[in-house]
Length: 355
Image (cartoon, rainbow, N blue to C red; front, side, top):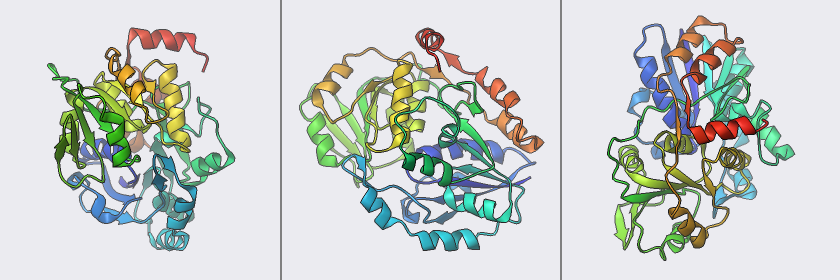
């Protein structure tokens, strides 16, 4: 089977999920896959060797300013005519199937040329009736029209009795984590604002990754680092907790490693606000609605999270894809959720919640 895999390149969560799928696909002789990414400049991708001769497009993305979506800047940066040309020029006739993780060029090209398409993404979960923050009409348009596909297989922390699967997370908790620092990843906030947030908390060591940091350096108890997959992975394994935005993938990795979470959702971003709502309902995070030092200080005193344990092998999903019965998602979902281990406190909350 020859598969085209379209991946949203804005942020690193979609790419992290695609890496796990790429590694599993590379082990099979019944799947051939080509990757396409969009949403960031070609020179801003890193650690992409596992994707082979991948292609990139401009696509569509959101522009942020000071921790919130800037609608005006987003509209100004959009290149609709370029998007239309890319969709029209992308020939998908050689493929048997499109897998899509919220990537618009491949999704619209597949729809235009009649190629069957499956969303395997966190965003696809919102095509089903699941808990969510207040949803505006524009949010509905984005979720439904940004990267439309024939079949929507969502990815989330719980199934809500819908066609939703758990995330695949390969990292396991370290046997002896150092717990020597707090990891901070707030890529949509300004560096000066993060500095002001953390500066008074001199007794805590903070390790901060940010796309605007060009060279590793230290300012007192705050260590600043540029994006790096191995560096970030090590810092996540050995931290005592994570301060992050409301992105899905980092929260999933933190839960797998039993790290407590302080979540600052991107203002105006429906998906991140909905993620925060679900995490809070499950008792798996504390909220940070503004960059408030007192809130961070209180959270630092919180105990470790009991976390969740997710499957690490996407083989059942690949078997399902190759089998071709794509509208029958129930056996796949049931098989994967049997591999999820909810802690006792989370199970108790799930039993008390009416989703």
